[in-house]
Image (cartoon, rainbow, N blue to C red):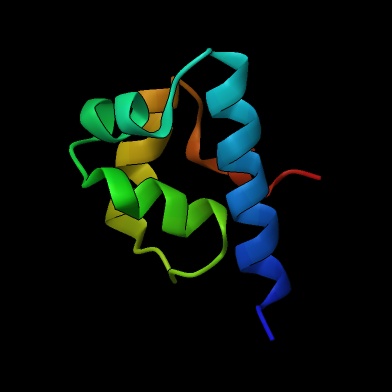
Length: 70
C-alpha cells in the first residue's frame, strides 16, 4: 500500500506540471533528474529526497512549502 504523503506529493507535482503545460520529460530536464523519475514520483513509487524536492520545486517555480499545503 502506498503511503498517503507520497500520493499527495505526487499528485501535487502532476498538478503543478500540467498547469505549466510541461511534459514529464520537460520537467525532468528543468530539474536535472531522469525523465522516468518524475513519473515514479507522480505514481508514488519513489520516496523522494529533500534535495530532489528542492530541484523540482525550482523547476516548477514554486516554494517547497507549497507541496505540503492542503
